[in-house]
Image 1: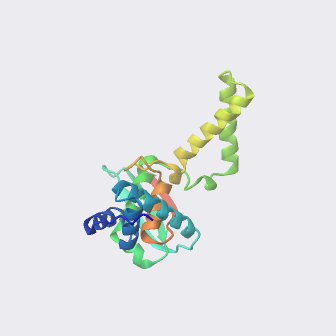
Image 2 (image 1 turned 90 degrees about the vertical axis):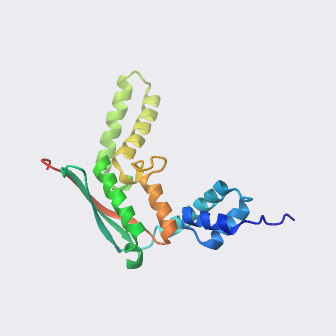
Image 3 (image 1 turned 180 degrees about the vertical axis):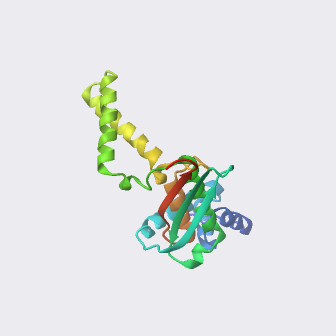
Length: 202
């Protein structure tokens, strides 16, 4: 039977600082990864996302309202970000997350929080437009249907906040960022609502 790999206190401390995971979780991840730091981070990320999925149905009624005003004071956004406890809501990390999401709203102009919020009639109309365009481009009905579905998925990525790539790290979506933070804080986190303002626009 293989003996567990011995890991250093320095590695455990470094992994904890970079991921926010508990000491014992970091130790176990490093042992599982055979001392490989990047693999250990992946183990923690996978475990954290699994825990996040379990927490996603819990009620989140505490939180903050964050504002972002772009340079020039002609563009801004407000976001209500909820969590489960006032303790988490008051942490600098949670408030920074809310600020980042407000910046995302200002910069990327989402229309909805998630695809579940997009009205059925809007989805049907977009799909019809994509399908007819694909047919007009000479595609068969079967190919046009496939192309319309692909373009609809792209449409969701553009208009739904949780499906947009993060403007500060486009390797992940806003939804994936929230799941990481749920795992970090150990509480459900929900974007309740947002509004975006542009000077001169209704």
